[in-house]
Every structure is written in structure tokens, then in C-alpha cells.
Image 1 (tube, rainbow, N blue to C red):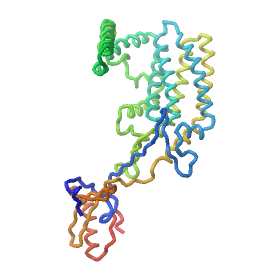
Image 2: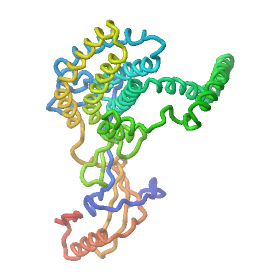
Image 3: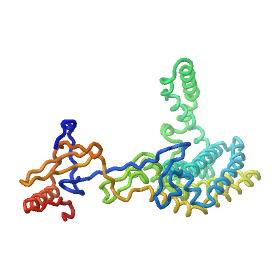
Image 4: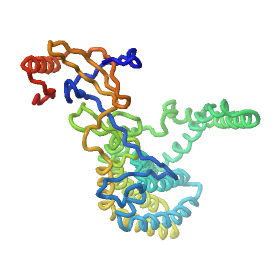
Length: 401
């Protein structure tokens, strides 16, 4: 059974917990990567179920705008109102620079969030929600304790000093460009040295790690956002790349530790939550900013953006249904067969051997024996008994029919 081209190929055979013994394979860790081919302009091409042929080859963006009636107009309203609101926010007086910066960052993060949502980019969207939550807590802090604004501003020098030490681009650039970048970093380091020294003397050495003197959890709880902090913890799992943060990307087909389907593409399952809470947090930010500065122009320009957010919020249920439906259409409903399979060959005399079967090349090679377990031993003995009794049909572990 061993072909010359694969004689030296040895692999550890997977312990067969499902699959067929004998002529078929015992598959344990099957993995499929569902790809979105044809990425262009940031929009992922998807292939829908045959029952939805009108969506075949369309982008996530196109599918959502087709299935969620009014979403395109709602987003246009948000972006139009955002521009007017942003213009008013960014001309605050210098006495309120901290909330000015937080509001500016929040506006940009929310604009990015809306783009991620219509493209189905759940991981990027949920990270945007995390940012909005932090901006909201910061602004609420500034409202209650304006003295915190200076701490917030002082921490800029700490970040600049960190940035000044990042010389990755200098090593890649050449000639004049490299010298210019090195000079820029050197000047940034020199300019931030004294402000950092003054800030540490004023606020203590721990200030170098974080501009606040309380945990985000305590600050959020103080502002009545304890439940929202739990969402922040979930976004941290996505941001930090933990196994629990693979929502919408890795799918368990059966048992918790069994075979999985891996997706290369947008994590659609994260989008509904990001949509719901992203709109909620930005709405709270707009209202909080209006309470800090009661100028007539800012108040007048806050109403259109709040109305647009309400309009967008009203489409959330339709958006959720549409994107979860698309997610289900793109998800395999069974473990796909991998190109390499483990085969256990049982002879009539009771002897057995393990092989690796390459479905692409139609070749096999001997494999090292896996660790023997009680389940595996029972299955092999059952096959041996059936062969000894003249039963030639391959046995299936689990059912042995």
C-alpha cells in the first residue's frame, strides 16, 4: 500500500473518535476555511446559499442594503448630521480641551464603526465599540470632576515619549528619508522629556501607565455603567486575541472540544451587538457633550445627529436578522472532510496498521501509532471480532452498525 513518493512521510495518526474504520477514514480534527474570494475596496465578496442566488457573488455591503430597507438612507443621515455636529464640537474654547479631544475621537470612531457594520467586519466593529465606551466614561468623568481634564492632557507627553522610541521605520527607510524620520523622533523625545518629568512629579510614577488613578471598572460603575463594563470585557477578549474572542470566526460543529469550522472573513456574529451598543454609546456621548457646552449652535446641531441615531437604532432588529441570516447561509452545517485522513487497516488475522490517506494525490503512507485509549481499544477489538466472524462491512465507531 505504500507508494515510493510518500515512503518517508510519517505523521501521527489522529485518535479516531468519529468516522469509519477500514476502507474509510477516522476523522477527528477536520478544519475548513470558508474564504471570501475577490476582496476589493474593503468589501468582501460572499457566496450565498443556492436558495438566495440573487446574492451570489455580491458583497456583504450590497446584501445588507438589499435586505435592510432604509439602512442606506439612515447612514447618509448620520454622516450628514455628524459633519455639522463635529464642526461645532471642534471649536470649543481652550478651557475644555479634554472633552474636545474625547468627542473628536468618538466621532471618528463612530464613523469607522458604521463602515465596519455595513461591511460585516465584526471584529473591527466590536473594537470600535470598546473605544466608544472609554470615550463615554472619560467625558462623564470630565463632567463630574473638571480637574481630571489636566491629568488627561498631561498624559499626551507620556504617549509622545513612547512613540519617540519606535524606530521601526528608520531602519526600513534609506538616505534622506531615514535621516528625517530619525530627526523627527529625536525632536519628539526631547520635546516630551520635560513635560513627562513634570507630570510624573505632579501625579506620581504610576501615571506613566495610565492617566487615571482609578480602574475603568470602578469609574464605569460609578457612572451607572457596570453592565456595560461586562461588554467591555468581551471586547477585550476579541482585542487581545484570546480563544474566547473567536466569536464568529471559529465554530464548533458538535461537541465543545470537537471538530471546528474556521472562517477566513468577517465575523458577522459580532455585528449586531456592535451596532446596538455603538449607537447607544455615541448617543450618550452627544448628549453628554451638549451638557458640557450649552452654546446655541452646538445644541441646535446636536438634535439632527440624535434624530439620525434614533433612526439608525430603529433598524437594528432588521439588521440583526439580515446579518445572522447571511452568517447561517455561509456556514457549513457539517464537518468538511480534510485532504489528509487517518485510516486504520484491520486484517483478517487481527493485525492492524495505521495510514495517512491524501485525498488530493490518492496516495497513502504509513503513520505512527497514536496513543492507545480504552475507547480506541474497544473499537479495534470490535472490528477484529466482526472480521473473524465473516462480517466484511466496515465498522463505524460510535454506532458499529
